Length: 581
Image (cartoon, rainbow, N blue to C red; front, side, top):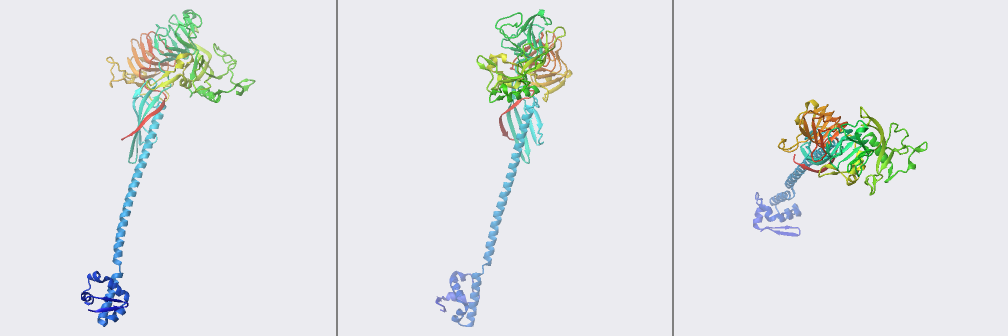
């Protein structure tokens, strides 16, 4: 047993431990397993003291080498640091790789989202362009597809009317837009409401009925000049409005006073067969009623502006606020305005502008939309007169109270979404004297037609199809209305059609031809069916010039048949959805 004495410590080693320590070449792995704490103590004690206690140079040298090796083993940790550094580097690499992958995915997702939002916005812009085209009559009745004016990456399709009536239709607008890898498809269901014309009407500059009676079977009659009847309308619910007058004729023409029954100026409760004011009981005839102009016209816009400027908080402007010229109101009608005749019009002391409140026993019939009433202006016009002798009609001038058509329509008509047509309010039904002669609607400017043909090239295919088995069967098994423009004077040789037909000229019916049409016929010139040809209209008949109502002519004013949308309209979005491209 060898004892090694260290300062203030005594450590005893077994023979086996002694052998492992002092035998050369036997330092191995077991060294730290059994004596790690002891060796660290030796190191702290110092080499010189150990050498002194052990004695002998040989053993001291061995011990010194041992201690040096132990110190190197205990204190030199560069290998461990390398392992830690490698582990830290690996962990950092993993974290950075994960972060970069996540960031890359986020950038990709953000880019796809941005492209998707851009594509959706482009699709919505395409929808708005489709709405604008419909409002400005740039869309036909058949499906229409176009590329957006913003970019060629947007395609817009406007469907044919899904459900249609006389004054409106439901349609679907679909826009497909792409941006990068994103594609969006948006659809909108819209209500197209056409307000340029009224339903169930026969409208013209003037009317002559030289043939047999009862040719206008139903609906209202509007004339900007005169109406010349053989007999009253067969439908007691019909109303006739004439800007100048209505006359009753015994013979085919009314060229002199000896052959007519007189003029009808009001709705008399009992028959009066002769003299001024001659009418038949129950007929709603109103000559000399108001005229109307569109709000976009020069006259209409001036009337609308005057009404807005002179109705303050629902109260008309007092007289003392209206400018005066030479002591009289500046808006008074001049004394010489009607130098050619002004029967039934105001005296020169009347004001040029004013408000109509349409007052009856129950009060004003003007709605709260127009608290001061409907603004009007007296306008001097030239009208035709069928009682002026050979070569009639000749010009005749008089003053007409003129209002804004859209304001009158909004006050006395409502839109029925179920029937897709305008209907009279109860106020107008009960008080037809508050009617107005509408302006001739502009159906050509800017309108996109399904068919545009010359008068000499009209074929049955461009007139639409009315489903009426077994005599008429349409390819689709249902009505196929179209909007067609015929340029030139047209002599009809076809048999039937449906939709909206615009004749940019005069229209006549060829001999032995019967033309049945369901919808609206608009003639930019004169309409004369020309016996023995026969014209039968189920819907609306409108002419800019004279309409000759002879024995081969029948109009059934109705809104039961579908027309094709033409002219400007108001579009109301009803629903929208996004679907897969």
